[in-house]
Image (cartoon, rainbow, N blue to C red):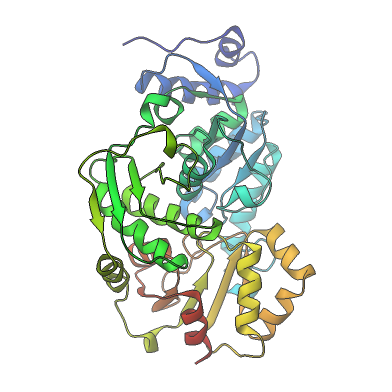
Length: 400
């Protein structure tokens, strides 16, 4: 096996000449590059780091971050964070224990000491970490990786938390996988003949395709989708990544690289009945059993919050209702008056976090959401029953 070639500066990082944390970071990247037989390192334009919630990190993860910060680690490119385990300001109102809050605060402190922007969002492309077509990245949130590769046409592998942090501290990543043009070719075609509207339908489509490619990790070429906006695409990316481990897809007329490829032969059909069956598979309890409602997986955009304010105007929710979004999106929504309307209805904003990474196991019995990804983790991680609805139906259930 050939070892990865390093530049003079990269060798200095590896030897420890640029500090202990930089050395550890380069050791991680060299090991990764050698495993995947990368020929060289390449510069990255931005980094997005997952593994932020103390619920996932634990004490060992927190110790690693503290050691990197104590070792003088400083980011060399713009770097943002995935959601934390709590709203960093309003955690008490959301029922987060003080002991957890203290440990989560230590996690954020370690990241910020390294110069990382604590955006705490799974949609970095909505809060300023917006790459350009063709740029190399080192992102780790699965839905954001899929969105960056497919919708934007940037190039990133799905990094783990440590490898993303290592890329941030060095400005480098090994050139393998989706950083290579030949690794971005579609291998399977899907032909959609269903009518797709909101985020739930696109989430169901992502679940369907994801389950069909999960064993092979084939890059899908998806025909028949005539239109898809940002909100539908972020829902689709989240679902496709969750159920299929996919980091890239091509969709003619929607994604920028699709015109570069011919669709692989022998298309698999996806019908309206298939979409409806996928939706039904995530409804495994009665709506009357729902005691928790969550919207914002991935984080809600400002237009989605505006729509939610319209739906909740003058109404009153009767269940615990979380709206998860980025802090900067929440601030914009507040300036526009949306928060006042939503909070008057009794719903709660949970910035910086989401229902996937917050420590909610044991607090609730069943969740209603428009997110197929949220359904997956609600069941697998938090042992909740799920009701999978459109946003309008979620609101109707909340106020019924």
